[in-house]
Each structure stands twice: as C-alpha cells, then as structure tokens.
Image 1: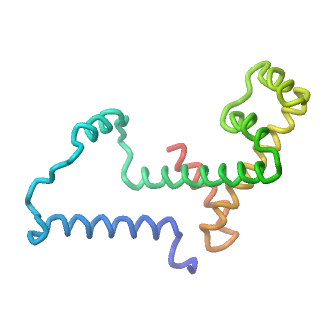
Image 2: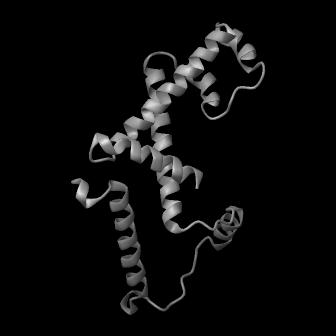
Image 3: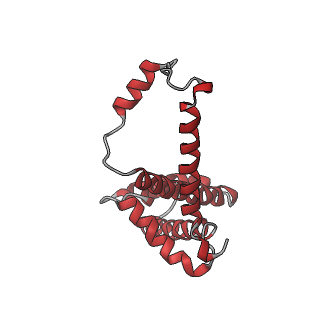
Length: 165
C-alpha cells in the first residue's frame, strides 16, 4: 500500500461504510422484503442490552477509532502474555499485569513480593520492565498497520488521541 493511498485504518473504515451502505440498500429492496418490519427473535434481550450500554455522543468514526485502538492494545497485551508464558513466567505476568493500567498503591509491592519470592524493589523493577515491554508490543502491533516506519510515531499519537477522545 503506497503512502499516497492513505492509511490502512482509513481503508478499513471506508470498506465498512461501503459494506453498511450495501447492506442497507439490500434491506430496503422490495424483492428481499424491503418495507416489511423486521421481527427480532430475542427482542427482550436486545432491549436489555441496549439499556445497559451508556449513552454516547461519539460519532461512528470516533467509535470505530476507539474500538480500533482498544483492539491494538488487546493484541499487544496478548502478545506480551504469550511471551511471558513461553519463557515460563506466566504466573509472574498474571501477578504483575494489574500494574499495567493502574499505579501501585502504598504497600502493594510489599504485599506482593513474598508471594513472588522477590523484594519489593525487585517487584518495582519487574513492573517497570513489563510496562516497557508492553509499550514495545504496542509499537510492534502498530508497525503492522503503517506503510513505512516513519509513520509509526504519528500512528502512536493517533492511538492515544482515539483513546482519550
């Protein structure tokens, strides 16, 4: 894919929009039952699910970008988990992974250290290394979606913007 043709994410969004437009046209077609009301087989369940979803004023494009960003983070997390499991440190990953998204509270490392057979300082270093490797895994995931390495920093900024906005 050449740089002039745009980003892969933009291509996916355009493809999704075209697909949805085609599906809408098919649903309206008279030969396919267009104009007839659709009957949901699990209407009650669907309504309950709808009521549980928080209201959002985000545009479909922003929702798409946010889901894309969350998917990138999840793939990076899976990659990191697999690295730890493959190296025989799966239990360490499970113990420390809570600190990827949450700052440690006072005494958290002290409480965890004996369970891991480490000192509190060693737990802090292990968490630091885990976070560092997670950032690297996120970059590796994003590197698969850009046309050139020069676009990687821009894509990282876009990912953070999608998550924050």
